[in-house]
Structure formats: C-alpha cells, structure tokens
Image (cartoon, rainbow, N blue to C red; front, side):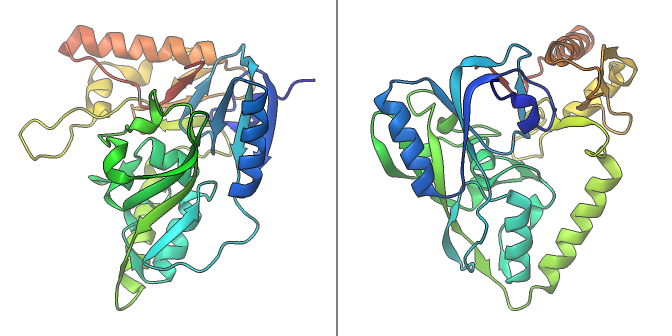
Length: 297
C-alpha cells in the first residue's frame, strides 16, 4: 500500500504518494536524492507539512523526501549550520536558552527550519530571512552546493527556493547569524509572551487540522508600515460564518482554516478558501493570495 501524505501534514489531509523516505541528516538525504536522480524519478521535499495542502488524489507518481529532526543536535553558536529537518520551535527554544538572539519572535511557529526558510516564515514584522546567511541545498542539476541569502530572492513569505529553476530542491543545512546577549532571561520572557499569545488565538492542533494563517497579509497602507492583516477583511466579509463540508473558519481568527479530521477533504479546504477570497474581493476589491502551498504544485 502506498503511503498517505495525510499522516505527514498538519491539515491531516492528502492522498498517496509513490514512495516516502525519511532522512534525519544530510548524508541520508543525499543518498536518497542521488538514487532518485539516477532513476529520473519525480520527487518533492517535505518538512513538517505545516504550510501545505495536499490534494485528495495525492501525488501517486512522486517520491517524497521527508526531512525529520535528528536524534541529537549539537551545541548552538552565533554562526551555526543547522540540519534543515530540525523543528523550528525546538531551535528557537534552544537559542533562547543559550542566550542567542534572532529567533525568539518565531516562537511557536510549527514545522521544520528548512520549510520555514523556503517560505520565509515570520511573525511580528520579522522573517527568517533576517537571520539566514546561506543554505546548503541539493538540486538535480548541481548536486550539493551553497547559496548565500542574497541569491535566494527573499520577499514576504516567499523565496527563490519555491520556484524554478531552484525548485524542486532540498535544503539540507541552514547557516544562521545569531546575536549573543548577556543573559537569556529577556529572550525566554519574550518567548513565553509569544507562546501565551499564540495559545489564546490559535486552535488546539490535537483536536483539529490546520495550517495556520491561510492567506498572506496585505501590503502596508503607507510605505514602511506594518502589513495589514488579511484576517480583518475576512472577518468583515463574514468569513467566520462560512463552512464547506468538514472545513470551516476558526472562531477566534478569521484567517485560520481548520478541519474536522474525520470528515474533511482537501477539496473542502480548497472550496472554502475560494469562497473566502471571493467574498473579500466582492466586498473590498482586494485579491487575497494563499500563503499555504498546494500539492500538486
């Protein structure tokens, strides 16, 4: 029986793939990728599956490389290369405890470091691109090589790693620039503050499936300002009253779509997202752009 990707996404949705292999370090990942390249096999990389909606039909012709946390991680330093399968929130916790600043605002963001770097994840006006120096990545055409952050064309919730000619690629290590501080106490306090805030506004992932914010926030109203929350427009357009099948809008946050794992389908989520975007466009003439990525691409 083919593996099902619903077991590896936070939406808990998605059909089968041809093969799913797990790597916990760069050497294992390279062996798998090079074997697939020899066979000219279509493949895609998977991290924590936290910003991903996989179709109900899955990707039956694709092999999937899942990058998973290593059993043990080495000590952190200000300039450090981290395995891309490391869970981002675990890395944030370790950095705060070690008195290394730069990651604390990303507390509570799910998924792996590699996935977060590819999508330029962020919060509170900051993004991973603020601390990325370079990435070690594998592509079928060049094999393993290193690209500086300047070559990654970072923008709000996007990077060149998500698009051809780099995509599909596998980010294996991320080189970070962190800042030592005299005491970890302020970092740990900031982390606790953010975790409490997220707990008050976000769903319990033990009860429902979700990928967090579904749509990207809007450009600032004035140059240099903060982005405008898409959730405000969604709420004003009646998003919290909408549901399609087993997919609905989280009552505390209009930009978070959640699923009943027992009844929802990926088609339900797609249909609900289209309904929400149409409602905002009709009322405000503002197009919403999904932050969640869809497979097939």
